Length: 178
Image (cartoon, rainbow, N blue to C red):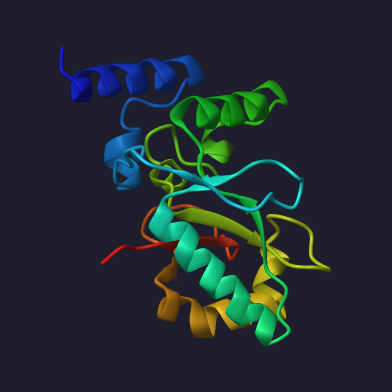
């Protein structure tokens, strides 16, 4: 069995364990996100947890954050790389709390389909705003990102009414290596 076959089999098992519908991949149109070969440690996140990104994404994130700081805009990491099992566990905890899988999949991609697996996605926070809140879209930090992030290679992944059917996530940005 090839590495790709093993990964696909593992993802299928994770999906089945969560009760993710068999047509999920076709219906959501999210691309498969492979886990990177190389990751580096970043600064600690808002919760003082270790986070990792690809070297290029971390360099770009650091440069972006420094530029924002110079303009008196507060940005900090809330989340970065997640492996497939972490994504499974995150979704499983929500299901254990009684959330329906359909509701969970509007805010969390299934294992294998989260940009966090790529090591290039960051969930971003700012002072004075609850983490992972749509209210982030009303902050000075979001406005700064909307105007400047692309210059550092970061793009808003899930704008309002996005093609993937995911809820608007103003805090979720992904570095796109050219």
